Amino acid sequence: MPITSRAVVIPRRNAIELGTVQVTEPKEDGVLIRTAFTSISAGTERMLLDGRMPHPALSFPLVPGYETVGRVVRLGKKTPEHLKLNQLVYVGGARCFKGVNPAWGGQSEYICADAEKVVPLDGISPDEGVLLALGATAMHGVRVAQVARGDQVLVLGQGIVGQLAARIARQEGAARVVVLDRLAARLALSEADQVIDVTRTTVEEAMEGEKVDVIIEATGSMAALTNALPLLADHGRVLLLGYYDHVDLPYAPLFLREARIMVAREWESGLDGDLPRTRDLIASGQLKVSNLLTHRVPLDKIQAAYRLALEDPSCLKVVVEWPQDGME
Image (cartoon, rainbow, N blue to C red; front, side, top):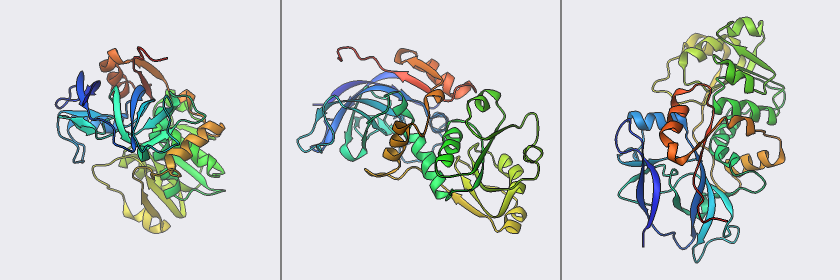
């Protein structure tokens, strides 16, 4: 029997509703999760609302979201033993709805998910669990860029992905991490060795001629990257960690430095993939993320949550709190 569930629904372009959907039963090796917290991935969901997401799942109506934390409330007959009833877990959405498309289906009161997609939140708080997706994305990017001990790293942008990438680069051994942004509120949250407010100075002036081994582009702006290329050392690496409609860069500074351009997509999956690695970094205290959860909004104010995430530059991450009526 399908399960009736509240869900955030995008019925058409530029519309957000709190509606009701039908969720399928869990598979034999799956779980049913009751959601406690979700978040809004501003870049992804802005493209969904605009109708620009280059993904086959973009067909309205849809349930967005891939940042879900909840409790396991039902097990399948063959669910792996590491998943248990009442366990707090993260899941990056699921394809479990009737009559509505998942893109990626995480903003739902109930979710049926395959066991391999579920990550137990061992040792971290449930609200911090909503950061696993973008933390894992940042971790994957830092590893694609081959950040190594002793590297000088420049991160363009201190939105949520840029913040996480800068912190993870340090954990991977970077000797020095420099970040830049246009927003003082974001720079104030940074844990980098040097922060550059590009409304007050240019990146070249602030760096005083120093070169970097790695540039991590996390603004989505080719202009920001173009301005930073003169700071790249010979044989330096450039990581594209944002999303871009087109890549348009001057060739000469890349050619003269024999630079390598790298592109990172989403995280590596699996029990030893980027999601559990990110969880373990948070659990150990090596990756501090609590100050990145800047806003909290109850589910019944979901439109306000989307306005915060998409329009308020001081909002790095909004936590959406789902009602837990009847839960212990």
